[in-house]
Length: 177
Image: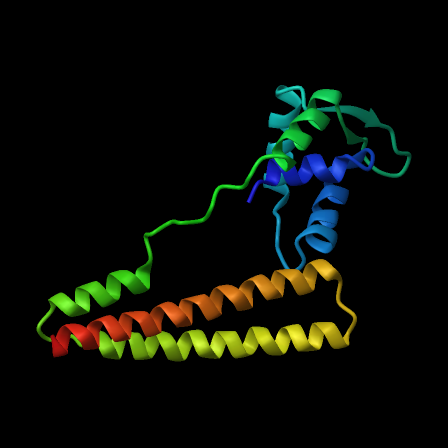
């Protein structure tokens, strides 16, 4: 996920300091996520170096001075270019379950069907957990972004379960053929 572009987007509404950016990211943008201060300030430094944000130091009477960051015209252009371009598809094929199944097929003392069964149980349990979390979130009037994020998790888990079924069928066909 692009922290850089998330920060640019958050700054598009107006100037913010690091703490406000972190809070807005975690509460408004990507609920239930954690963004550490190091990521925020390192990203802000890079954005400033690249001319995408500018900052001013604001004096505070009871606290240390703080830097408030604002989006530059160049930053606004970068944000809109990013919004207008497709995201890279997450097709990272380095999958631990896949590796386990393939190794279990090769090893004489391992059972790939057992691996699939263990993975299916784990995935099904996680799916139930996320479905319940979504139901509770909706009852509590959760934000649209929270519901959409939970929907994404549910759909990914359902797709993974479907893939596990496909693996099982391929292994059965290999044994019968």
